[in-house]
Image 1 (cartoon, rainbow, N blue to C red):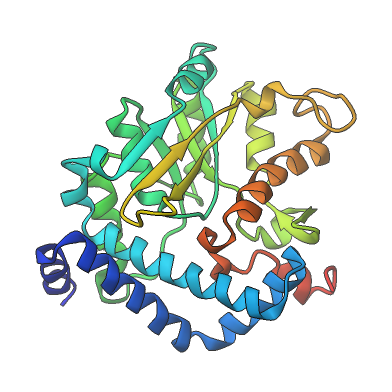
Image 2: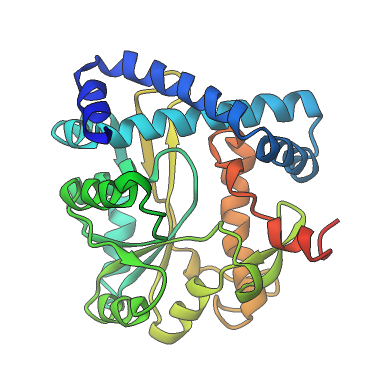
Length: 294
């Protein structure tokens, strides 16, 4: 069934397929109404906005998710002429980071289409190793996701569990590039830091790996174009680990402050483009459940 759906979606003109993705996002929003209510509430509290605006933001976020799903299904087709759909900027920043021969950590987030961004890195001449969380293989979904990721962009995916740490170490030691989604709820394994003004359990892998290997940390943001929904921008403009924290210390010296620096990058991206962040992930689920956030 999945194969049939993929075949049909790949036959459609791209803009019509994206329109279908928007509709699918709206349907998903109706199906997941309880999660939507929670997302809207989090949006109001974290952005300090009214409920009407929060509903609009979350609705557009689901539409973006639907379009991203369609693009993922069409990834092989898009990859053959990716420059029509993605502008890649910041190659010089990444080359500077790689020139230090300590590997590179990409600080990433759940914005726009991270799958398409990964393919753009390969097409720009960079091989990256993203960490991923396996999905339930219902109806062969996980198998399909892995197949799409492996054949397009030739990304060497690493599970964020089990023996993944050894593979991450090998990649950084060989001056490779790993990508870490820093905006997930890390639950009890994380460090409590503010995220958009609300206490959240934050993954600590970026700072730990930087301290262990001295790997430069490069934030990468990817955004759907505001005027042309079929076009995307992948942007790198700094090495955040070269900067000082709020107390003038080097990145990594104060663990909490360094995590907050990483959070601040993603927070700025979200504030500037709130409807492109995946509010569905519920960044604060752990801290609200534990009563840490209120």
